[in-house]
Image (cartoon, rainbow, N blue to C red; front, side):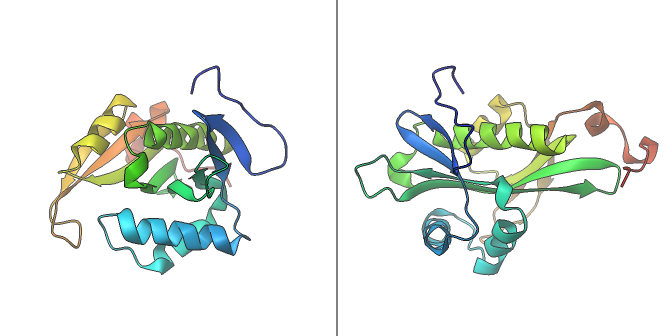
Length: 192
């Protein structure tokens, strides 16, 4: 994010404004936000996720869900969302996981997805000192693969027929600490 970003340190959900678009932290108590995210995911994500999947993410890790709103004075609808989590991986490293990135098609190619991923990476590092971030994306989603690789993600595995539409996926990992590149057998257990 550029130095011209308008960073907010107050207690509101607004985190930053980039190119006149507001980036907010998801508010788990806001049913309208949940409804708009549900609509965005169901309409524009290639994988038909059950509402319970993102409900689980949104309610368990709301701090890792960020939304982008259409500029005012428009209808101020949510036009982009990233849904993520952080958990210990095999009790030896902290792993961030990006579950979903969805941008309304009429707002794609504006850098919104890149901004959401960078925001998530930054928060995961600062809040939970993660060692790596993992995600999966369809092998045919060249734009997403290019985005992630430009941010430093590495393809680590091809998952055959991973999605319900029978498309293969790539698993990508962004190494953050040395733990990410050390075999699990050689890492000490995380401290409680």
